[in-house]
Image (cartoon, rainbow, N blue to C red; front, side, top):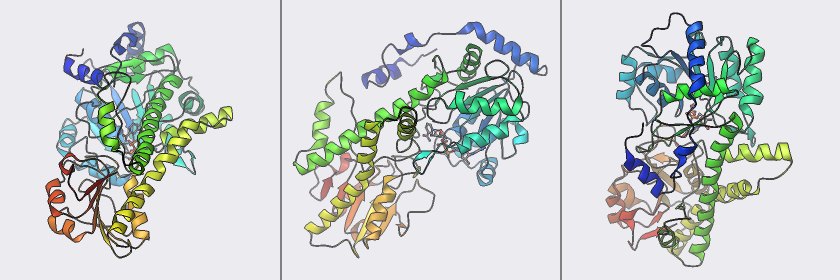
Length: 470
Ligand SMILES: NC(=O)c1ccc[n+]([C@@H]2O[C@H](COP(=O)([O-])OP(=O)(O)OC[C@H]3O[C@@H](n4cnc5c(N)ncnc54)[C@H](O)[C@@H]3O)[C@@H](O)[C@H]2O)c1
């Protein structure tokens, strides 16, 4: 039951959630009993107090928070992870995901109901398995090999009455057209009848303290009504609200729609930002003004490009499928890809122009980049536009340094990691602010007087004569 009404008014005020979305979230109790019957029949040892045995495949940005939450609400959780180093870190209580602190991880381990492992034999006798493995692009095409491998490894432990949920982002049809046949062929069991199968897209927004795994409504689906009920029953134990849809295809498409919507709108403001600058119009002020319209407008802001595991990849899953199945181009996606992919080049061009105004060449010039992560307050540098900006400047001979305390992995080629301090800012000829992490002491940047290209409109830098906005 939702008790925090302010959260909902907040969401509605921003157009994030349709005000009456709950009306579409029809409860589906009749089949829940059947699922419980199936589970009890196949697990006579089940005690009333235990929720059951959950396997979460992949302990990354999506899988680890799910595992921790499931432990919190009483599940026995096996966190299956093929990366042995990650398993070691997890077992030692060291979290590598911002949304789960090491303290939280230690508490999770302390319950005795969380077992990180690379050994699939620990999946034996599972009640529910959730697949949260990567779904990248390879040569511009969906690479579902991680999902296929996970299914192959899981299949030997799949038994009658168990539930399998795919949570990785993918094109519509994957659950029914790929996962079901793989599991059926390996086990001889029938999806939707002998075991439950469904799809439930992940909507986590790393770093967002307001909309969390628990508070964000979860779309759920199943390949049959019984499967929908089982998937819904599982997620009802971990999140506040579920949103059942009629089949996995709708659930799969809903995730791609959400990400494509964001991708396209970001591309729109990015392209507008380029034109507005050339026309000497303040795009940020125009966006502020447009955002005062209480209906029919949703605020998006320009930036150096898109990154992470979602926006640069997911819309291409959809356009690939449209092209493959219908032979048609998904023009919105292609255009958005084109605009967003070129933003790092535009940032580099603006940097060159700013140096040129001071009769300086890029070659040999010291540039300080603030932010390698694609998003504020996270350490996720996957597909980050900052990498491209840094590489472009480095290729032109710049001495590129970067400060990002969140990013723990190796820096882009030729980039030296530094701390943000007065000396670093003063010694740089140009500062490029790509990610507005809260942890930055921005007064250092504001007061040093070094020219800044601010790609995020940081409030503390507004109206300073040495600061130039994207
Ligand atoms: N990160 C996000 O914000 C986000 C949000 C929504 C959806 N998603 C989607 O969720 C899926 C997972 O994304 P992520 O960000 O958690 O990825 P991640 O790379 O952080 O984690 C995936 C983990 O799965 C492990 N893995 C790969 N194959 C495995 C296998 N066969 N068995 C066990 N473990 C295996 C990897 O080693 C890795 O640790 C992707 O499809 C992604 O598009 C991600």
